Amino acid sequence: MKKLIVLTGAGISAESGISTFRDADGLWYQHRIEDVASPEGWRRDPELVLEFYNQRRRQLQTVKPNAGHLGLAALEAHFDVQIITQNVDDLHERAGSTKVLHLHGELLKSRSDRHPDLVYDCPGDLRLGDLCTRGCQLRPHIVWFGETVPLMTPAIEIAREADIFAVIGTSLQVYPAASLTSYVPRGIPFFYIDIDPAVNFQISSISNLVIIAAPATTGVQMMINKLLP
Image 1 (tube, rainbow, N blue to C red):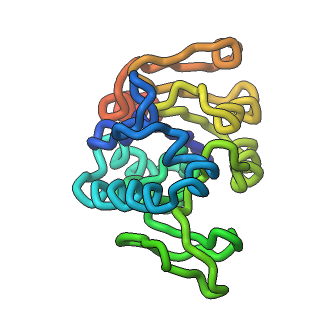
Image 2 (spheres, rainbow, N blue to C red; image 1 turned 180 degrees about the vertical axis):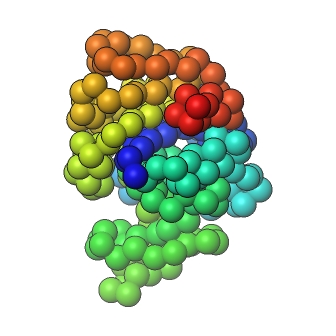
């Protein structure tokens, strides 16, 4: 089977009702990004950070995968599909995708504040006093601003193996995730699906580029029509 590698961003989840990470006023659910998505914010007010992600976790239970997620899952019948997502929700998995790498962490997991390799399932609320097996406070398993992206190296290796590559629902402005396009083999089919695609120099120089200016819910089906004529 050919390897179809897909990089997804906030746009695909937004269509399920999950707000994008940064909206027009620079706030995320009426909170400053620095207060709820940075190591400094965590040190300053861990209770605020924990409750913020508790609310996001509760909201996640109220939304469902959309046609974009479901279309990518259905493509596993025809391709070896690997999804690299910048999203922290589990909508790809709930849609049926079996290979999903979460670059920026997972909302439904927690990890030790002092021992990052200690990661746990976290389907419900997380509170101060919830400890890892080594006695340290648990924090959201999220890559915050200013932190390294531990899964970037395996993501690069996956991108290098692509026979077909697709970017869906991202403006390609968030690094290092956006740099994955530079590791994609030249000359392979490359799809860029976004309601407002940001065609920068890096993208415009790609040969065999197909731009689909549409939301994921319709754009994924348009890609499927091209892949499976």
